[in-house]
Image (tube, rainbow, N blue to C red; front, side):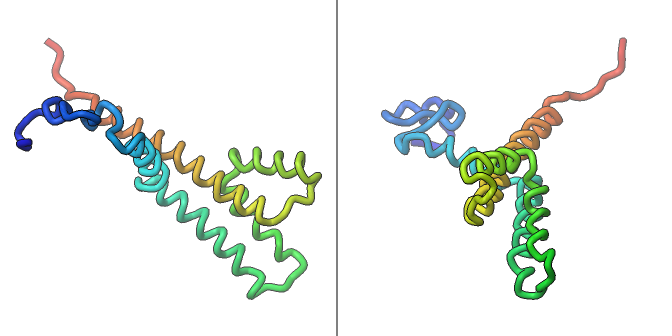
Length: 142
């Protein structure tokens, strides 16, 4: 096929569609790639995940350097950075284990909450950038 042909001409091959129309033979990987790009491959999501990851790294390293009685309170920061989604995780931990949920559950909940919120931030970022490009130019009234 020639690269000068329109997308719909390239899509006439069996099992394939054009980029705007859906999936190819891989069975939906374009959709998954799009979600991954929304979650991690834009500026807003990357900054958010860096902040949450940094807070988790500080919280994980804190027992190596601090031995005070309030050492475990440093995990409040990653939970606060992921709060709206992490509230559901905390509720599940309370319902399932009665307040004694294992550490792996809360750490995994923080990671999952950060990814869900990063996906939402990426979607909002894409929507706002899309609107900015569709405004058109201002003209004078006649």
